[in-house]
Length: 357
Ligand code: PLP
Image (cartoon, rainbow, N blue to C red):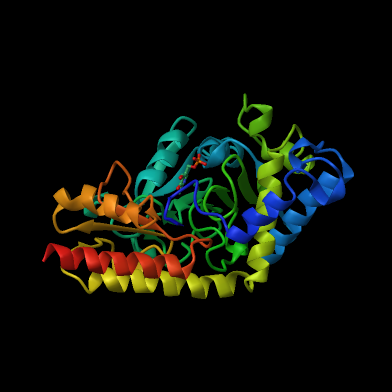
């Protein structure tokens, strides 16, 4: 079966098999990794290796901390302003859809939010161009969502905010392609798409940005606390961290992010070509901003949606229903979704369309 879920999403089968093989007895220790103290030398080794592999994969510069936290990307919507305002009175946000909208709403609890650009006018079917951004040089930071998981809109460039730190929610496209980390002040991502199971949140933050929080910030919302404790101020999500480590090793075995990006572009390219090549399926997103991770599409007649989903599921093509806020279909084709899954989906779509003729 092929899993097109937006998240929690497909994990590499090889990773799941390895986790299964060592589930009850990790490396001959006679216990599961889940049962091990996070303070044990063995677990600290697992955690450190995962961080090192992620650093290698993303070529994270030394002046960045990598944090393995809980609370999901949603907690970051608050943690970012709590830590990064540092005396400033406003922050800039780009609004490109549901997820950036939620980040904006949360930030408004802590500061004045200036909308540097919004694509609400075209129903969030594109990303704004650099020339359309209205940036405030006094802003604490500029926040944007690199890939809108629901709308299937992905930035095709990294915004330039001058000296203002750039903050990115990369929950749904982290590790899908190489990215120049040095362009960012902070990157965060919920794990449950390209990193591992839900329950883990990865934050990559430039060291000079941390250490000053809003009054009243809970200890667990202070990046410095986590950075100083190697993300072990309290019990970290040990199993998720371990599994993320296996995913990072798998990615390295695939040839790293260049190789996985080529594969992702090929997968997305053929799916969009199939959609564009038919009068029956449609995707509304501007071509330059079409996500290589989440491909939403509609059928010519939405009354056929239920039938499409039913037949797809019968063929083992799972979780193709679009988000409840937009309807239609959505195929999430993260790193772990094999090209064969995309081929099977396209084949099914073409047969379904013929049957309707
Ligand atoms: N940001 C984006 C782009 C997402 O896709 C999601 C969830 O799917 C979130 C934030 C929220 O993540 P979490 O559920 O980890 O809080």
